[in-house]
Length: 286
Image (cartoon, rainbow, N blue to C red; front, side, top):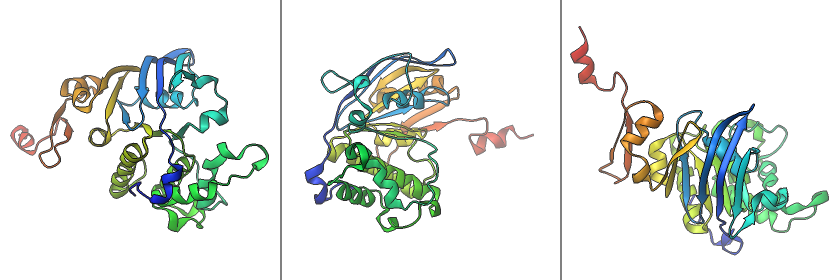
């Protein structure tokens, strides 16, 4: 699923920089994200990590304007106020793959992916001359082209996840937000999807922000890591600077060791539970 298809060269989306400053979000009057700031840059993958309830998805949804903040400044490129853009204008710049999308009924895979072209169609279903080519590219990039005419309700969870991602790619934006994109995918497609994410940043210059639970996957794909805990950004920087044993142990509330994989040279994490080694179990057994 590498993004090097020559047919996509002429319509390659231009990456945008999306900056968020002072983001505070409240649910039922209680702040759940506190004065968070981060920047998504063209050609970079930024991954948000942290324990459940740390505010990762809420912050990402706020960047996508699906969550209304109590306070925030969102800026695209050189001073364009993202909160002042019309929904259509914003959707031509930023796309979001959310969690838990419903299974479409009575629609083919191609129909679902074509929904990603809605910012370009205007009112009354105005024609979209670039749409068919964009949809074909998105289907091919996500590996679901052979499923284009199949009913979406007959797909597996992993296949459907890739179809929804294809819809985001058909939207052809400069910023792509992914909320736990590897959900429902088996190991092969997790790896291929993360490879695709890297290709979109490296080859197309897209600014990508993603929420991931797997710290090793985050270390492998990210240029920058944003670590959240209790609704606050506690670290933002290079993976090797953020994913330290002390920071992760403090954030997750469990001992986490960090070392370097001798095969790949990448960071590797390991959570240490009460029964973490066989030898220790043997020595403590009466």
